[in-house]
Image (cartoon, rainbow, N blue to C red):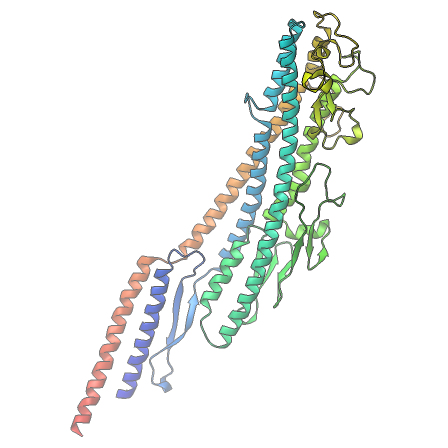
Length: 485
């Protein structure tokens, strides 16, 4: 080997050691940076005709594509399960649990107790006032549950709008990074930073929809949902559209045209096409808005109807004509079965029994439409009202199962459904989170190991010193020859 070749080899070794040190320092500096993929220097022996030495082929990002793909699918599963579990937890809180003073079960119990107390002393206006207060509290509780359901639907609507905006923004940024990566690759430059940024961007929206990444030429990637929707394949990303409303009421639905679905590149998606976006928080929020929450609304509407029907029966209160409202009303009017949707938000105690609205307390004892207060010691109606609540009967609403039960039994069933749904969905969310945590741990294990990097740095230091020694020795030998001449 000639001295010039020795010097050339030493210089190539110094260059490789310097570049390796740069990469190790970058790895260590980004050990805690989310989305950063560990780099390794790709080296090979230089051809003999070029004098030997070492050649730098480039920098390799150390990632496992399959693990990243699995983690993204797991993120979507977590996004979906957590969203639904959070909703059911809110509904359990709305219905209340056990003997909480504000629970539906306890509020109904208080009303029944007030009726029993008033029946024992029908002449006592204080006890009649307690009946009014507890009836008002019961109506308000039902109103509040209905309001919570619709507020959660509005919350889901806003979440859909935010998810769509996040997804569109991320797709636009991924398209730009694709273009930058293609340009850098064509120029022979390192595009690792852009690759990191692109991976982090895709990861950041994987909770919205399950995203599949497909490599394309020159470092580009195409993005699809697991259901087959094309999000990005080329230079222009797909444009997902959604028209949100500011607030939602019980009568609003996609069937009525009051609520919208998604559009893809300006074209509305049908029910079957919507399934292309299943699997993440986007689908979960649509399910809450259009299916889960309306099911809860139907149940509380049916409860309100059962409460209304039990106390508006002329057999219970003879002062009522068929069709007249009793102690509870539909916004001070009679209830119609055709208007059951949203009734829980409208049910109210009759003004006729409330002194603050021009009514008389004695009507609770004598009858809603009674012509006079009657005998102050008469407890027949109060006894009938209490019996009507405790009687086991089939619900009139088709939204409930055809099982005879008391109103207290119905309230307990609805509360139990909310609690069971919460427990079931939280268990599912925990399972999804555990799986995603395991995948995340596997990804982190592939990340930067500071101890290993320091070992590599010491090896680079020794290699640099050895190559420097070779360079110095060869140079000294050349100097010796030059001195002889």
